[in-house]
Length: 557
View 1 (tube, rainbow, N blue to C red):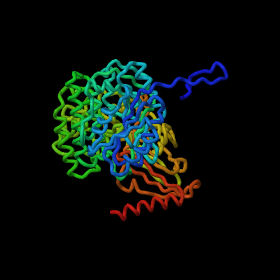
View 2 (view 1 turned 60 degrees about the vertical axis):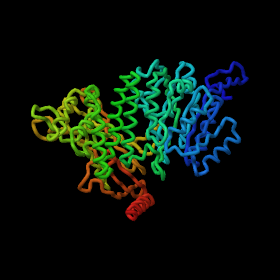
View 3 (view 1 turned 90 degrees about the vertical axis):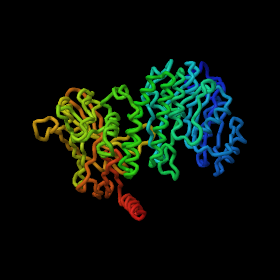
């Protein structure tokens, strides 16, 4: 039994809290993942007496995973192993096998390469039973390995204990398409016939979650961490959701999103269906657009054509919702342009936060448009969009010098909106990429004034500049992202990243002397979304390691 941390003993005797009834079955699925599946199973069993059973479904592994599970089950009566005779090619079929096999009144799902954090089951079960809810959900964190960097998944949904009589009370639920950070009442799934798509169906979570929401369950949400999603980008075989280099992945994604929309619409959940279409623009389109520049021309053309065909299904009401949002502007460009174009500019618009780079064109009536040759894509909604969510753009250049490094910044006008708000100061800070846990590590924070510059009578011709010192020795070894906050005289503030200026040797690697480190190897670079970042290697040893890695890359070409 676990002691109740909130109890106060009345005497010197310690009183143990009664054990929670065993009510939860955890379904663990895996295929050829002997290196991790044991940790996943153990994390489920370690949840305590609330877990009645762990059903491990092996999808016809050939690496000894099933034998490993059998050995674990021999010493753990709560663990049952289900072996599939034929590999399904996906995650849906083994999860469906688990739903069929589980006997507990509540069920959770766990992938073989992830883990449940301590207390996850208790937090979800307490919420579900206390609220008489069919579904309880909590916070999932994406943990990058081996760095340990963690990013909360859909954190705004899980900031407080909340009970929803129906999902329509929180349309943003369509953004949380994961099935693994939730607890489900087993008979609720069975009564409504809620299952995963079978076979090799990518993004089965999107479809399953839509089927759950379509059934209109009573839901309980908790701010507790209930799932750790391990992201191994350096793995020999990427997970299905991370392997986005082939056009088939995008086609599978759109298929899943289309099926989710139809599921919600056919169930009469029109508001959720509309929200699902909006989510596709804000999440899916932006995510893949950020990576378009990394793909070859054949992929780019196929992506553009397929996306145009998909977006053609949207109706007027879909476009009227939040028309100035970056995803909608991006999608409009794809719809109106016959072939891929403006990919660097679209990449910046797809960034988070969004950056709309020049040119800032106007049509014959003087209204904002995407470009002179694509005037049908209107940017008029930017004229009334709140300042704190405007896609304002700042150019940044890191001037690395032995006697003092500085970052030069230029804030662009945006159809008169920046001048109207009155830019005053700029907070400049560097954020460590390799943070661990929930702690963000920042250094070098400074505030500098913004000075008007530029010429011309049109407000769009103007800009504002600033310079900030960068103490490379204080930053030290690691990867650092530049983060800015613009403070306006009207009281608004906008947190943004900066567009990395390229060309003319601006991103050249340099070695500079350092009293603290001896020497620092400095590499400014543009991230996949075009933002300025810098890699630092300290000391002679660090410089040698970086040089060796570069040499290896050159030899592989």
